[in-house]
Length: 182
Image (tube, rainbow, N blue to C red):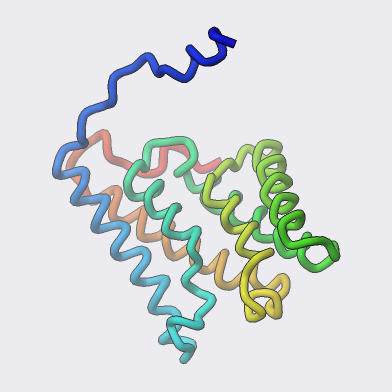
């Protein structure tokens, strides 16, 4: 037991804060990406508060693709595949399994993790997307598999385009995006 608990001590020092320039580029990408996804509700003449276009898991994706664009989980394959696969699994679980919502949520997230592992598309916000498909409002549930297309796929592609532009505007040779596509 002592050996097990010792593993929780942590053996490394907290890394230093990132340079101000990296923070500024991260802010710019996150602001533009989330703003563009949010404004889709205006284009479709829907109320922003009732809009399906702004999904909570996109906030976590913004942190990855704009704040840490070099990490594996932020790459386009992971961003696109993780969200789309997880959304489809979440919708499927909700549509076809008449279970307690807690059990459906756990199944949707855990099955999404397995699917993302098998497809090499791990994107942590994908787990939230699967959960949103299960615990979302009646509006989310009424869209069925259209939820996978809009808001998920359309929002992801908008955020990806912004990531490609903003992350490559910097003169820093270490700040480029993506590291890989497929």
